[in-house]
Image (cartoon, rainbow, N blue to C red; front, side, top):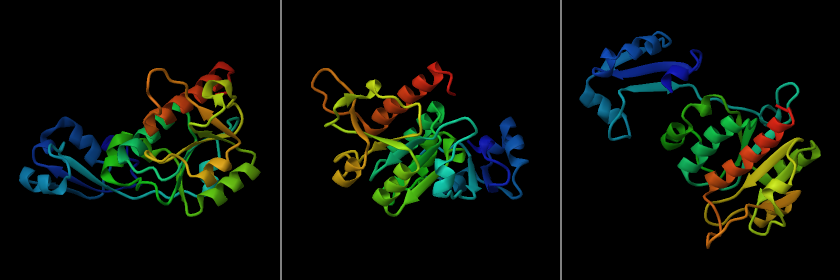
Length: 231
C-alpha cells in the first residue's frame, strides 16, 4: 500500500531498523520528503497490529464533493454504492476494494457509517481508498432525492425485494443501497429506492454479510456492462 501512495499525498514515512534493510524500502522512501528510521521496539509502539511490517506512512486525507462522487469518466454511467449505518470496518473496507474491482465510480455514506480512515478500514481496502471517491452525507435521504433528480436509479438490497437482483438492468446510472449489518436499511431510505431487490438463497440462510451482498450486486452490474460492451 505504501508503494501505491501518490507522492503529493505522502507527508512522512517512519521505518523500522529491520525494514530499512529491505530492498523495497529505498523506492518507497524516495517519494517522501520526510523519512525517519526508528528501532524495532519503538516502531511496535507506533502500530496497532501485533506484527507490523515495519513501515508507517503519514498521508494527507482526501475529501470529495457529492458531484465528484457521482461523476463518471467519459462514456461511462455512474455506478454507486450507498451505505447506511454500516458499522463494521472490515465490511466498509471490503466494499471499497471489491467496488474498485467491479468498476464502481463512487461510495456514498451517511454520517453514522464507520470512519473510512480508521486503521482497520484502510488495511482492508488494500489501497483502494487511495483511488475510490467517497462522500459522507449528513442527510442521506435528502441526498438520495438529489440522486434521483439526476436520473440515478436506486436499488435497495432488501428481504422484501420482489425481484431477484439478476432480473434487473443496471446499464444506466445506478446506485445500490446497503444497510446496517444487524437492522438493514431504514424504512425512510428503503422507501426512496426505485426497486427493492433480493438475493435468492437456499438452505436456512436469511441474509448475507453486508460486504458479500454488496459484492454480489456490484459484480452483477459489472457483468451486465461488460457483456454489452458498455465498459
